Image (cartoon, rainbow, N blue to C red; front, side):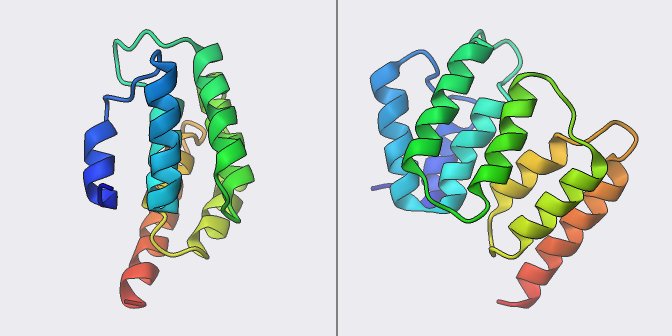
Length: 143
């Protein structure tokens, strides 16, 4: 089995959206590695690389697979944000801030933070980024 870092590097901008078997296997592998690895899959589904032709429907279907196989206290809220991103909907600042604080209670969930940060409303990105940076700093201090 790959390490978390190896897994993340392997799928970053290379998730096999249209290969049912490989996508399913990678979701299982991510869930077995760590929550942060599973959130990386969610990140790939929510924010497809430029030029990727995977449909919104396919990404939503794959998010349902993640939802069925992944267990984490912040999962429902983060997956809700990911679904909004797939549908190209922005998330209100107050909701992003609350979800970031929720994720912040679960150390080292960097990909969950990233998903929420990029989903926020235009004009609020600086405030969201400051909250993200504060959470990461708290995680680093607690090491």
